[in-house]
Image (cartoon, rainbow, N blue to C red; front, side, top):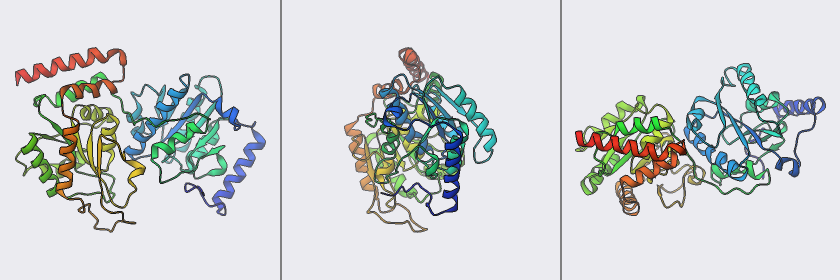
Amino acid sequence: MPNRLAISPRSAKYKAFRILAGLEHVLRRHRPTTPQQLASIRNFLFLQYDAPLGSAVHATPLFEAIKTALPEAHITVAASRMMASVVQHNPFVECCVVTPSPKKNFLGALRAVRNLYRQLPAGVACIATTTGNQRPILALLALLTGEATRMGYTLALPLYDVALDFRAHRPQIENNLDILRALGREALAPEPRVFFSREEVAYATHLFSGLTSETPRIAVVTQCSDLQPKQWSEGHFRSVIAALHSTRSAIPIFLGTEEESAAIEVLRQPLAERGISLAGKTPAIPQLAAVLAQCDFVLSLDTGIFHVARAVGLPGVVIAPAWQNPAEWLPVDHPQYRILRGDSIPMPTLDYWMEEIGVEPALQAMLALMDAFPSSEAARYARLKRSLSNPAQMASAIANEKRDFDAAHRQA
């Protein structure tokens, strides 16, 4: 099968990459590429600059899988600010550094990445790129950084020692795990993980100080910030939210960016129970994760916030577009999630909205999840415990936040 993430061998760019690869072969020693040599790799430098939040979240299972298969492995990440926010508390990553953007400041990025490469422990190393980070400029960055084995996904095939074949019918997580499989290690796909600190738990708890612990909390994501055709009508959202409140006393917790807050206010104002809007109040991804961990369910468009909700184990319903393969990004056949999607279409029209998904299917999916995974304070704290970054502080942090939460509730 031809590699979909590749430049045509007949292009001038491909031929230039071939010349660079040939020059490197003459000037540098041979890098590890045999199965035995690849199996000896323990040092990993990941170049992670993809912009979408979902892509960053979907890289996290690979880090956990590497540390599970190779406990002695060392993982360093050269990152965009988005990626750094996702992994800054990740216990499976030893070092994550925000560098200049290779696209905007290549020399600055090169200096920073070279410095990270020099700080890797002694031993065989590789520089790797996951799906979404296949741009040729990252291959050039890896080429000029050092003599490490280059592997992963790239458009510049001649510059990589192990160039993996992207397969669109598989989940992004599975494609990323092929990096570990290329080292001769079996890899079962763990769920995405986003971790947070005790301070972020306290911040999130404060945002919920006006709610009782018994009230079911539905995180609601009504805006899609990536400009893709993934909209669902305000009327549909209002109908589902109103029904969940009238039947289950559920409170909507609206999430989004500061730029989305005005549209969220328009949607929530006609509701009898408007809930609370946290739009713009969780600018850091760990803050958002800590908020989601203290909700009970999520009702969301197929967007980045949903992926963070999944990364903290929050059950939910996602409204998915008919033009995108759900297996690539969404947890298909996962018991905690319901994916609502119309019949497949090859391409969306300019005026496409996901109106083929009605109110009743979304409502019934939410009610079924609420029956299968009853909301409880214990479930919220279990999610907090699972994602708190410092295991030694888990018990005390959760106990302290529970005490503060109960005290605030009594005062209210």
